[in-house]
Image 1 (spheres, rainbow, N blue to C red):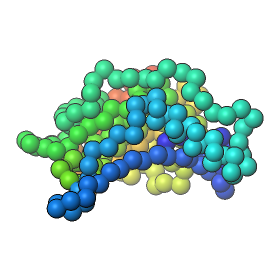
Image 2: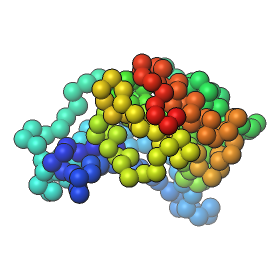
Image 3: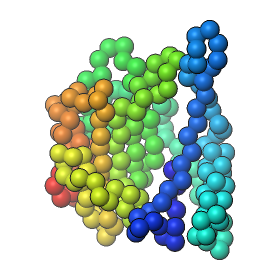
Image 4: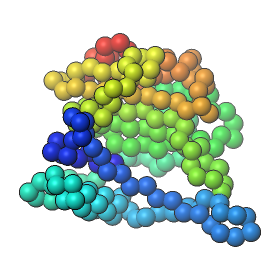
Amino acid sequence: MLVLPTACDVDGRPSTVTIRSGSTGNGHLGRPAMPFTIGSRPEVARMLLDATNTVMLKAGCAPGVPLRVTSPFVTVAEDDGSAGSPLCRIPGVTFGFGPGSRYRKQVGVVDGRLQTCSVVWKAPGTPDEPAAQYVMAGDPRMAALFAGLPEGAGHGLVRTECNGRPTVFYGNAGSGLKGSGRPGDRRVFENFTESVSRRIGCGAGEGA
């Protein structure tokens, strides 16, 4: 996902461009979901930027210079794999996944302005089903994407200001994982907020 510049806002809210890939088979088993990779991370980033530049031109909000990659890609020290506890190595983010679980974690960006951790349910022949997502967004444009959502730890959304920047902490467990947080879903979200706040040198967040 890429957040567009302010000139492309709609009704005062940021617009985004996303890319999603998928593939299905076609045989005696019907049309099961199949593994599909559209490219490496740098290739996907360039594809996303090309799509974004085209969209902005069509919408009449393109900047004078097309968007391009200017920084090295951040990589994590672990591969995506079976979800365990603590999830994404975030202290206190603990679920009862159970033995033989098909839940898989994905560790995203981990820096001072953004941290993501997601979980999907993987089953042969079916698309990955989103199961949980945790996000810290410390960039004003990213934080603005959460405007209008119910706030408070009970809703999995806390806003605060960290080092002079508006910062959002968001957490959601889907129906498959709801109720499996240890010791509880709300406590897991509070642990996420507190742990990431400590990592980036910020308070725990109002309402956490």
